[in-house]
Image (cartoon, rainbow, N blue to C red; front, side, top):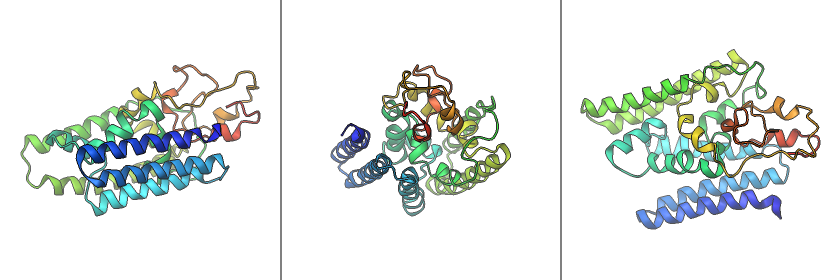
Length: 272
């Protein structure tokens, strides 16, 4: 039963968050929202344990489409980083602020960059592109993410400094335009660099939150050195260029792991 520990842990974590927010905010939406996300992620992990080939993609679609279409388009909530800044500045602890706190600020202490592998609606599309294994060496241009992070902060700050009217409407359009730009840039980079995850590695501003906490993640891929034959297959198939044979927190690109488990599936000796 040990192999079902991860699905169970995820279910418990998200259900705990769901119940706590429901009771403290007196709003059943949070119970339904986080229960749905938790069940979706746990289902995907369960399917993975059962060796279903497209387990992770199932989760990506269940969670990604829910957040993009229902929360974003139907409910009109900006779930991008601009929405986080907006609700933070208004002093309202709901919607994007809660989402970021759970999935991208404190949650990574448990599941690292799991958000990027199982729930991101941008990566949901990018992972269907043909370059699942990076075709070119990783570039040292990750500093771009800090620029996009600063731009998103400056944009929302300007709305408040200039006392812009109808901020809610502006944020909704920012969500639509922002997603369109993310998809366009992400797809272009994937084909240019022959790497589906180029956008995640170099551009995505959300990783500024994710990376520091992921360093301390409880759930991480570890290597059994006695079984490892140093064949290099795990490094070759990793979409994020992580050296999973190194169990140290300081391993190469260690905070980039999205728990996609491609390394585990491709290890010939079950050393991971």
